[in-house]
Amino acid sequence: MDQRIINLYDEYTHRPLGREEFLRKLAKLTGSVAAALTVLPLLEANYTVAQTTENGDLLTERVDYPTPHGNMKAYLARPKAEKPYGAVIVIHENRGLNAHIEDVARRAAEAGFLALAPDALSPLGGTPTNEDDARALFGKLVNEENVARFAAALPYLKGRKDCSGAVGCVGFCWGGAMANNLAISVSELKAAVAFYGRQPELAKVPSIKAAVQLHYASFDERVNAGMADYESALKAAGIHYEQYIYEGVNHAFHNDTSAARYNKEAAELAWKRTIDFFNKQLI
Image (tube, rainbow, N blue to C red; front, side, top):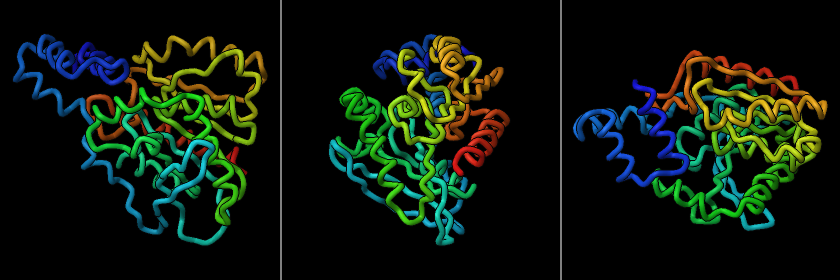
């Protein structure tokens, strides 16, 4: 697919452009409204393919946990065996908690972790089914309160009998930025993995206690603009980190519900590295 189309969609989902303007520009790039409507399903998420990890030997449930700014709703998954597990907070993109992220939580559980996927839009009634509506709601969140709500997942998890006390997080896009922010804000966090997420405030990098793993897409100019400075700050502060750049792939390459941007080889390698990282750090 023409990279200009993917870049336009990225602009639409992150600035965002209004849908009418996005479709007008898409029609211009593709040559017609009909062609634009043919391309559109390849760009947008298709959650009918999100169920890739069956519940099988997993325990899954809907939970609430308290925060200083109201309760958060979340999806929880873990192996069925009753014992303590290292815990992973799974943080969604700017589409909210959806079928894809719930499946990512099941993947983490299948790998042997207690996985908790909070819904950042809980204070606003939860994630709506329409993605445009969901993205619009993110602009109503207060950043400091939002970080505090995700940080509150740690005492909730540590208070569960099925948690070993070791907690990490993994986030994607908007959630990748949140993973970076949790790393600078929560000293008890053991590991933070960010997939194509905005970098945190560099002056606060020395406060990081967690081990950090970063995944970037080579075509993702928007996020990659802060990559080098963040790496320099991590080095200067002596933070244990791993950084990977996946050549020839786009932002959101891990999201298998988006045919145009998903890259199976890069996604599987990045996820393997993520699980290996958690197996080392969450002990």
